[in-house]
Image 1 (cartoon, rainbow, N blue to C red):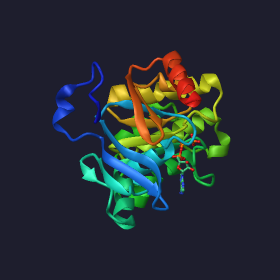
Image 2 (cartoon, rainbow, N blue to C red):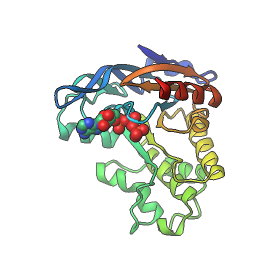
Image 3 (cartoon, protein in one colour):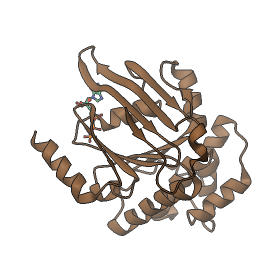
Image 4 (spheres, rainbow, N blue to C red):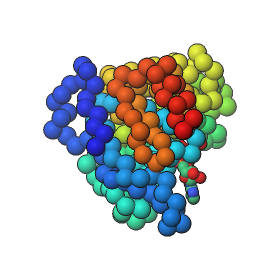
Length: 255
Ligand SMILES: Nc1ncnc2c1ncn2[C@@H]1O[C@H](COP(=O)(O)OP(=O)(O)OP(=O)(O)O)[C@@H](O)[C@H]1O
C-alpha cells in the first residue's frame, strides 16, 4: 500500500485519527472489460498535500472521482475521514461528499449571480450545517478576500476567484479537498501564489489536499507526488522535484 505519513514538522498527535483518505484495492472497470483503475491502494494522512500526476489517459481523473465519491469503484473500498464512501448508493454518497469533501476546479465553478460571501457559504447552506463564523472570518482573511466579500465573481481576477473557490472548499472544514488542475487557467505568477496558499493552508491548519496536475512545477509544491500509469500507481515521491517528475513523465510517455 502506498502510505503517506504526516509530513516533517506536522504534529503527530493526529496519528490516532483515521487517515483523511484511504483507498483499498480500488478497481474501476468500464463495460465489464476496460480496466481504468487497477487495484489502487493509497493512504493519505491529515495535514498532507499530495499531487497526482501521470500521462493523459492514465486514470488520474478516475482515481480522483472514485476517491471523492463522485463515482463508485467497481471493487475495493474508499474511506474519507474514517467513513466509507464507496458502495453506499448515490444519496448517502452525496451526503458524505457534501459534509466531508471540498472541491477546487480549474474553472473555479463559482456561481456568477452570487457574491463571494454567498458563494463561500453555499455548500454550508446546502448541507444544512451551521456556519462557523470565526472559522469563515479566519479563512477569508487568510486567502486575502476579506475586503471583497460583496463582489460577484466577474468582478474578481482569476487568482482571486480561485482563492474564493479554495475558501469555499474549506468552509465546512472537510476531511479532504480534491483539486483538479487548480492552476490550469492561471498565469505563472498567479498560479505560484495559489499553490503557495494551498501548501500554507495544509501546513498551518492541518488541512489535506489531493491535487491532480499535469504541471511538474505545481506538483513540486506538494509534500509528495504519486505518478499514475496504466491505472496503477507507478511511483511515489516524497518531497518531489519538478525535474525528476518531468523525467518520469517523459519516460512513461515513451513506453
Ligand atoms: N465513463 C467512461 N467510460 C468509458 N471509459 C472511460 C470513462 N471515463 C474515462 N474512461 C477511460 O478511462 C481512461 C482513463 O481516463 P481518465 O480521464 O481517468 O485519465 P486521465 O489520466 O485523467 O487523463 P487526462 O490527463 O487526459 O485528463 C481513458 O482511457 C478514458 O478513455
